[in-house]
Image (tube, rainbow, N blue to C red):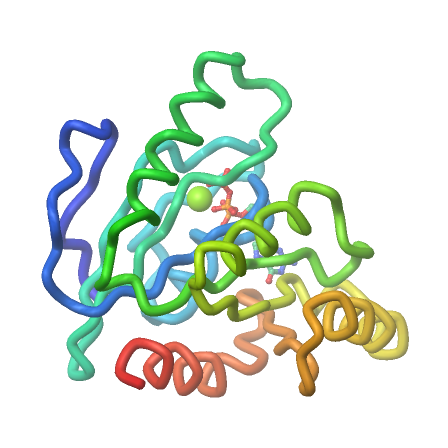
Length: 189
Ligand code: GTP
Ligand code: MG
């Protein structure tokens, strides 16, 4: 995994002509940590315990499958200004619309929480756009298996999938290989 491009503004967006899978999710859910976990390196993507760390769109090139993993800024960060939130929305929307290279969006969801409004809105929006959603439950090390299974079922039912969303942990590496498999399959399938 290597970073190849960072984008802060809509004006910087240009077609990146290679299949892409994006990582979306609420601020602080663990998107950047997951990039580092997948890449097997600690400082590929900047992480922070303060929400709102990632303000840019970051393209990581995956070898040898040759696709981009795109780390998106988190949504729902209450402390940022209305103007900033609007800017985020526009950047993400512009990235997601008319992008034939975007094959799927992995929506990262906190494995400890029942489906939250913003997450439901995000998955519905993607569905409406015809972009496949890969639900991924994060921070799996922080919750007991039984409670986790209940949250998994809630998401499965809400998304009307016939399988359970994958639970991962960037801390322990839980299901890292399985997630790679799903991402690569989505990018190339
Ligand atoms: P934004 O860039 O603000 O959108 O956040 P993000 O989704 O990129 O989250 P980030 O990866 O920066 O992680 C947020 C916090 O959660 C950090 O303190 C991480 O150490 C912690 N964290 C992320 N993944 C895990 C995990 O699997 N287990 C545990 N225990 N903590 C995690
Ligand atoms: Mg981040």
